[in-house]
Length: 395
Ligand SMILES: *Cc1c(COP(=O)(O)O)cnc(C)c1O
Image 1 (tube, protein in one colour):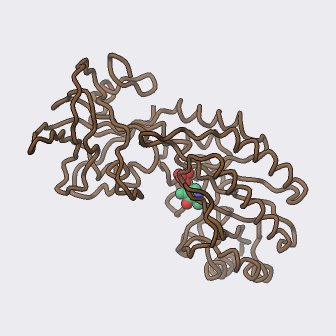
Image 2: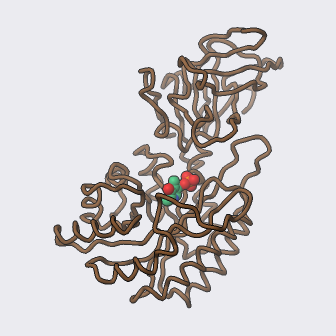
Image 3: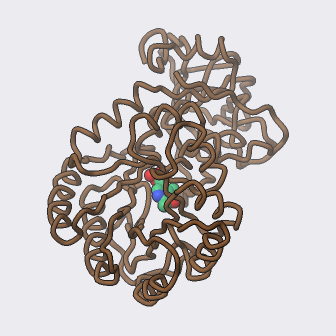
């Protein structure tokens, strides 16, 4: 941000809005590359870095990241196809998620993808489809651990979940696996998301390694692949601090040294979504109208919750908070104003900024929502009210 307004990479927001129109998602490659570089510098050299595509499945972005990470995690046949079409080898892809359809399983088995098995029923279907195709499915058991990564610390006690096989059931299921024509590669243990506390992430990773060490005895050929999840968060709201990855890297160094003896030859995978792409994205929309209602100033934009559900507070937030908002174009107005930024939808849910202080702005000016590179476009109800879809640009 300078006197000319907001820059995204080398380009000014105004020029981008002019060239591509609004509303618009802009993703900055250089920022994504820096993030990967920073992880490579800090994390143990043997650690595999995966991208969880559901954070942002834009094909050009997937291709760009594909050249920089060791693998990808997908959650549907559609995401799997995107990964394959953009240069990822099936052997470097893992596929998790409940309710995988037979066609999805067949595509994964046929392309050598590692399937994270979510239930005993799914395990049986995978084995049956593999036999029908004459191929040996590559699988990992996804475990629903008896602990959870919580903002306030580890939650012990083990919640019910549609994801993974309960830790308590894992020994029984592993015995069932031994009787089936599948290649058991390892474990997938994912404890949570959007965490900004290094101590909590360290605690969760330690619990994940402990669990893997405990279950290793049930693997006749040893564990060759361990996906320890991710959960690295990015700061969205006032008062939140960026995650300090140094203590996590130090701890992983120790755990990986330990796993060299306890899980010899095992590949350790860290799967990250928003941490890789979230901060690299900006959503731009243009103010169409400014109105005052009973003393409250509304800026009405051409963007809204139909493009950016997360910024409206309706994607996983319990108490609604404002994403970081800026007036993105040249606004040399030192005068500030408290405004409520809304979209064009006929619902009070269509709220992008609730009573935020911004430089005074009006019709024609641009609003930018930062931290919008993950769970934006693809996590929004784009069809709702039949407005045009926003463009997406990778710089
Ligand atoms: C969604 C998901 C991720 C990515 O989560 P982020 O918060 O974007 O890092 C990783 N692993 C699994 C299993 C997921 O479901």
